[in-house]
Length: 326
Image 1 (cartoon, rainbow, N blue to C red):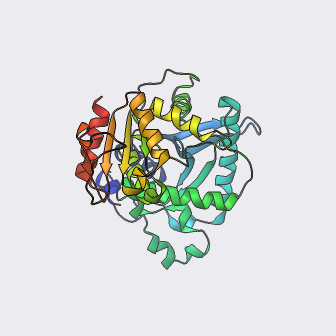
Image 2 (image 1 turned 45 degrees about the vertical axis):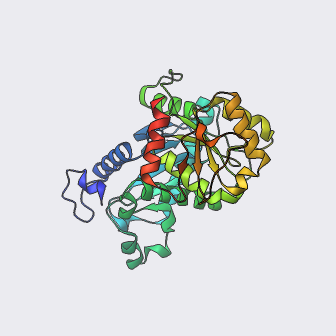
Image 3 (image 1 turned 90 degrees about the horizontal axis):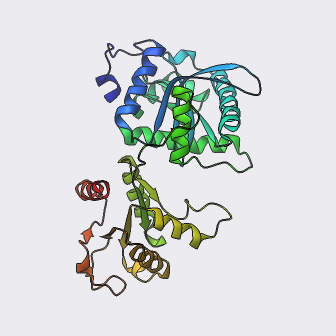
């Protein structure tokens, strides 16, 4: 199980360990390998305020701006059946009712099974992939590293949304709210003081560089740095200019992706001028092989221009250090 086995005290055999032991090892992996903004609760007990039934969840994740995930840990694949998803849907309903009752929020709650002792190929070999969609299951290979885990998490998110296809407006879970919910589940206290939040980056780019900007955002978030990026961080019905201006005002660093399209963009220019007006730390990244005479009329020597035409860990390490040192 990759890092999951390496960090465990079990014998590492197929299906080795009880479900409680596996749950603890999965929890340990999440705490050690995932960014600090992922809040994980082990054996979370809660009461559905509607049905008044008590529930105990193997593992529950709260990820700001992504959602709430319920995970049921299974040690033996032959025990898996569609009834497990039905049970998870009951848990989902209970969690939704609980969050609405205690915190007045209605986030989307996602359901996932977890088979950390088995590979996806085992499920296919045993014919169980015809019974349940593998996109709803974490397998051994999904614990190879944080990227593999988060990739499966996002696939599960996408398939949950397709499964329910519910109409309605769901609340975004901010970092502040995620911390409060987690703290309540740990202590029973509803409104704790929030510790220092993770740094926030405003990512400015032209839509022609959308794919690369998405890669950079994902890398930042894997390092525990929040990223504001249009259009996904603009709430429905909100005026774009007001939202982005407030985001620039509140950010800890302004990262601008410099390319021929971005230098010709009135929108990118507006964001850049706002960052200067608010005295933000500006980090320009040149993402093309080209000479750079100026940045919207400013001398590029004003900044330490970083050149990165594809994702580079060394450069991203340096940017992370700059952002977190202030």
